[in-house]
Length: 204
Image 1 (cartoon, rainbow, N blue to C red):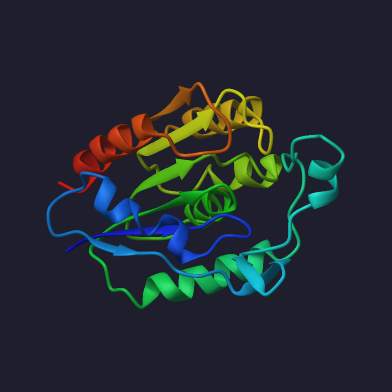
Image 2 (cartoon, rainbow, N blue to C red; image 1 turned 90 degrees about the vertical axis):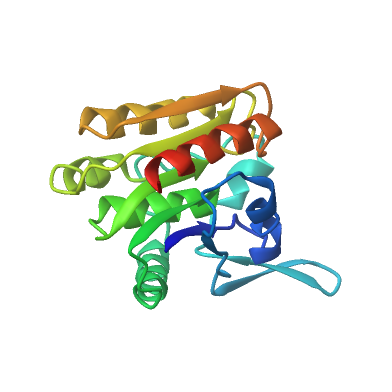
């Protein structure tokens, strides 16, 4: 059974991405999973979101985009272990993982660490993290098809760093495309169309 797992972004939760299951034309009969991050994020009042690991919010508050190209976010390895444990329980024979923003970072980290059984990687507004380690890990990781989208005017995670991630994956023989769209930190309808095409190709 084809299976798709998407990890949400920082401060959101599973409900943020769950509507995509009905909006994307994936292969018929796909199983969709939208796990929640294990950390809670206060959002003000009685509201809270979820996260996979902390992010340097001070950089955003200072008006800069977050730059993780040469850093390992604290807690990322724990998030990866938790996510891999979740994936192992699915017993999926055809599996695509991905996510939005922080969730895309987590999915990429899982893939470059050599997670077995993956058919593809779907990265929505993600970024390059800890480039030197990912570069080394990619020398032995299984090559995967990938789809990546990013807004040209993203003020959270820069388009330039998305380009660097695209270049790094292709350097190691991964086949994919970076879809640039005229927007910010978001998932526009044109991305849903192209992501559906990608999923039908890799999960057919």
